[in-house]
Image 1 (tube, rainbow, N blue to C red):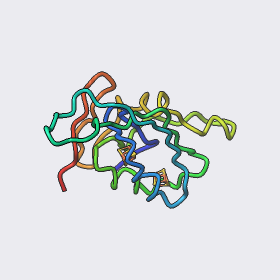
Image 2: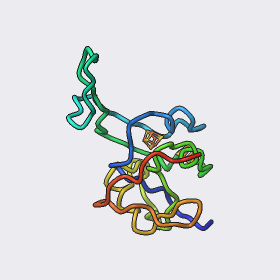
Image 3: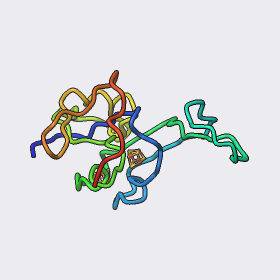
Image 4: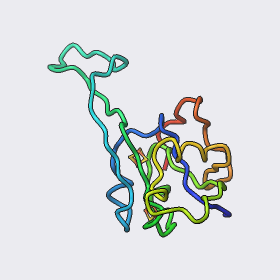
Length: 131
Ligand code: SF4
Ligand code: SF4
């Protein structure tokens, strides 16, 4: 499949860190915090409030990335995609580190491995991937 970069759908990312752990080049950096989840179901026997992870930052260092696609394949929540966006030429090292906004900007051309379009920035998460 033709591709030039990797796209992130931020609302789909649960900060599970699987892509960070599996990336062979250690070029993904994520920061997140946990906060109470008002949408979680309430159980009569629960002893503490349910929480959810909130993504604070997500960066891929394309100066280190070797385009193996492992991060896309392992993401259980359909948050990472191949995209056809051209990376800017002649950039400095710091410009090769793409943050959430830059990764999300590639969503319009992003595709799943089966060729279907990725959700766009204003669309809800597509959910946990069925294996
Ligand atoms: S495609 Fe790049 S960021 Fe993703 S796992 Fe491979 S080396 Fe890491
Ligand atoms: S594997 Fe997917 S859901 Fe988990 S942190 Fe990476 S992009 Fe987010």
